[in-house]
Length: 355
Image 1: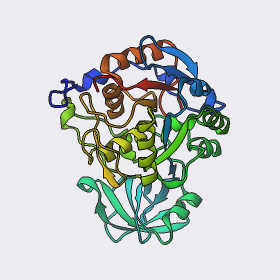
Image 2: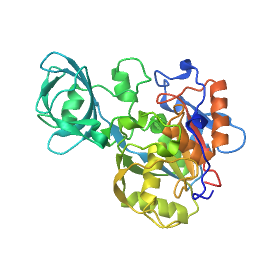
Image 3: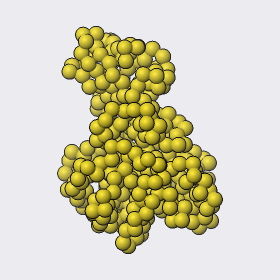
């Protein structure tokens, strides 16, 4: 597909009717027992996630996002007694954070907010894109305070309060680098037996880090999707992962992104290299917005959960696998009662030949 002449789409093109009872409120009893819709080509095939090794080839490279979800949600109150809810978006040096705050009246710079009846945070002012966040200073290491006093930042469509089960299951088994406020959900389906089976199959592994922000749930509010502006997220593609991608390519293997966050990291890093050139290491920010017509450079296959109607992630998977094909897969998923969103089922997609 010629990126200079991408197809014209409006927000309505990424809408679909989803019965609310299909929104998964809890994870499957076993991670790898979730359903997997094989949508690589032609008619969809209903599978189970633990069948994945048989769908990949020796020499393929699975790339995971090794970010770790932090307990980013804090409940507190202002000195006046008014309730405050914070969602930490980013941890900064010097015990500082950027956070979303919900309160009846926004706290002023210089004021204090007491969280979990345990510690006070100073409000330094507004920060972030368009001053949409609050800049706070904690009295000690924010990661330690969040782990002790925070709550799992479950997505807004999960209606129950977080539990110990959520603390374990809204986290991948290989999470290593704390900083995300939402899980890379396609990777939630992997457990130790599945990883062992993939290794035995000869499937290689590599990792990127992308700290998923709360903006992943930000709705698109414009009909002309070209006018939408993405939130920025920090990511890193290491030299080792870039080398693993190059070695896979040289040996004729395929690069399989586990989740849209992994795909965004890989394709963001590739934007700075010549078309067809080797993937280069990168560490920094990305606000990449992938819509139909996007020229993919790295990823051949994508494992991904089912996404919200009209979301930027629906646009991403439509760009990757073809708009009409993805719409057909979603119709099948609804008719077959797949479970949707973060705790739901997943599908395997192949890059459209014209992408």
